[in-house]
Structures are given as C-alpha cells and as structure tokens.
Length: 116
Image 1 (cartoon, rainbow, N blue to C red):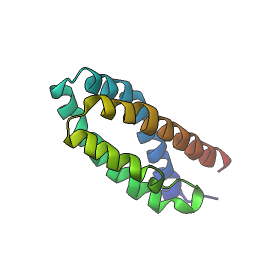
Image 2: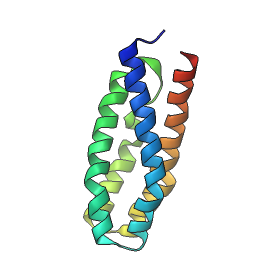
Image 3: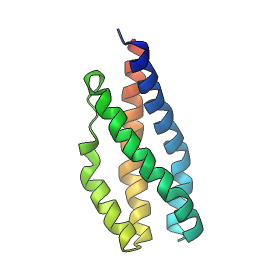
Image 4: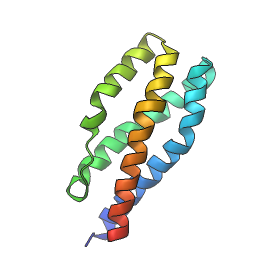
C-alpha cells in the first residue's frame, strides 16, 4: 500500500505527463512552422518539467518500471537538433519518440495508482 506522500508524487507525475501530452501538439506545431516566439515560450518550461520528472520518477522507482534512461538518447538527439535549429527533426522527435513514451508512462503510473 502506498503512503500518502507516494500517492501525491505519483499523482503529480501523472498530472504532469497528462499536461505535457496535451501541450505537445502545440509544441510540435511551433517547431514545424519555426515559430521562434512560441518555441522560446515552450522550451524552458519543458526543460524544467523534464528535470522535475526525472527526479520524481527516480523517487518512486520502486513502484514502476519507468526509467528516464529509456529516452536518454532521444534527449541527446533532441538537444542537438535544437542547438542546430533543425526544427523538423525536433518536431519529429517530440511527436514520434517523446510523446508516445510519455503516454506509455502515464498509463503505467495510472495503473499503479488504480491498484493502490
């Protein structure tokens, strides 16, 4: 049985991944059309959010089989594509690599919360 603090962290993870999943089409579109203002608006919150997600997943790893290392290479490629302003590749990485992984992880966290 999960403690209240653990439920709170897992719920926060689930909520965050849901919010990012909902926001992702806007992020992808901003990169597809090279909307620099929107890209700038979305970038820092995403980076900070992924840093928090990494920490929260690590704190709760005894309850699930999620590991940020699953997308480490994708993040490295994403960093390169952003650095070189390859907006099409960045959009593709968000759409076809990161978004499906977040959806998969969100399901896993939801399952953990339902069991408890």
